[in-house]
Length: 282
Image (cartoon, rainbow, N blue to C red; front, side):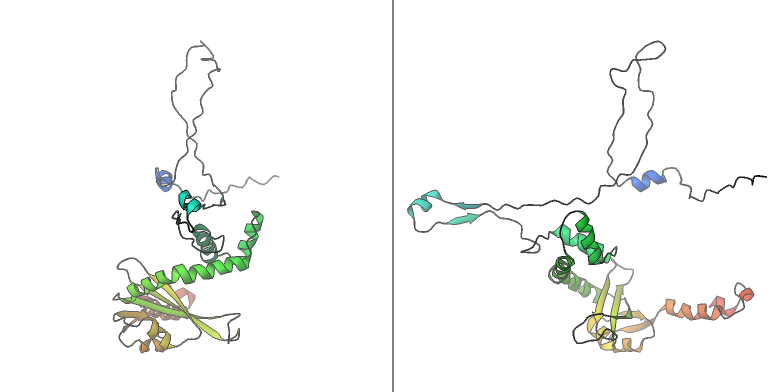
């Protein structure tokens, strides 16, 4: 006997009317209208002239892959013919041209931004970016990409970072945290030595500022140096070295406090975890 057909439930979220239109409202729209050709006869019954009674619209999302082009900036240099003919020297004028974002390289601002986005947002390591460029027929080695990342960081992003840092330490609330990590190759250090990545975040007032700071160790002096001049509340965990930020007021972190209650809740029998208890209330 054949088994009854299996019914697979539709678990897709139902969209409310207008929800899809609102989600696509920020995108440009290209409209293609399909009409009957002039050679098409009219009504199949009486051969009378037809008019547009209604339209049916089918929408689809089209993706335009990354396009790469060579931008040649041609800078004209001008000279005066009488001076060229009669004088020993010739005055020269050069047409103004935008300054290269990375002099001596093929990198444009868009290329550097794209590389940084792929590396830190996606995140794609440089060797995978190198492979993707090779598929496009463009020889960009990971060494070239690495030089671009370093140059963009030191030349263009460091001033932005410093400006954000000045704004951050002027706030009345800064949240701090850190985590340990190891660096495979670092001058004067082994791959097993612990380094630290500090995280500093602004409060809810004003635009959010989130800054990372790498340090070759874990010590309160690093937080004191980073937060020099900060005089507000400093929410953090129980790491004792934050006490070295003398002018800040240490504030306990609710997430860390809640963590201990959650750990305690797991020590109860499974049947008692959902019921009323002092642990759950905490």
